[in-house]
Image (cartoon, rainbow, N blue to C red; front, side, top):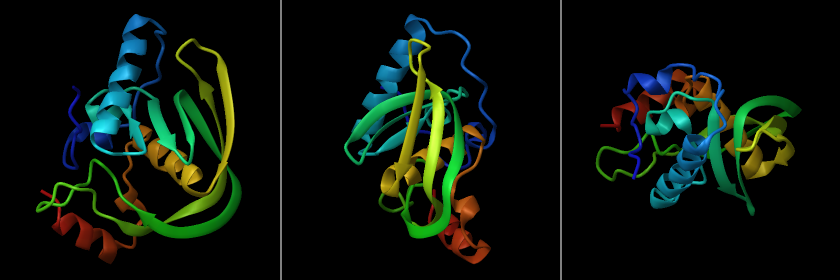
Amino acid sequence: MREIRYIGDPVLRTPAEPVVDFDRELRKLIDEMFEAMYAAEGVGLAGPQIGVSRRLFVYDCSGRKGHLINPVLTVDDPEVVLDEEGCLSVPGRDTGRPLYAPTPRAAGVRIEGVDRLGRTVRLRARGLLARCFQHESDHLDGALYVDRLPKSEARKILQRTP
């Protein structure tokens, strides 16, 4: 099983490369990403989180399950919603479980990408699913949710990581 990479690993801070090969290896990778996400009890997982610097993520959130390759996210509703957010790549030193903090995100988004067969996928999301899409898209750009927190809050989180 693929291991989750933790904060401090350079792959998490490097913008991911576009996926260009839609082959058996890609399909296997997507399956392995779902396996790793479920094992860690997450609702989303991006390529960089398992050390694969490619623009793709999987999700199973708010009753919707899927994957997106080379996604482009657009804010649909710019109202800022402050809600608890955590990350499999930002675990607590003592518990190994994600650390949570109120994180600002747009209330609604549109996202467009392709599936494992190269077919276009267009989705709209609000609530937790919108948060998930924004969170995973950030991973593909080399960003973590702690980057969206006030510096004092980010410091508190980072002091508790391994």
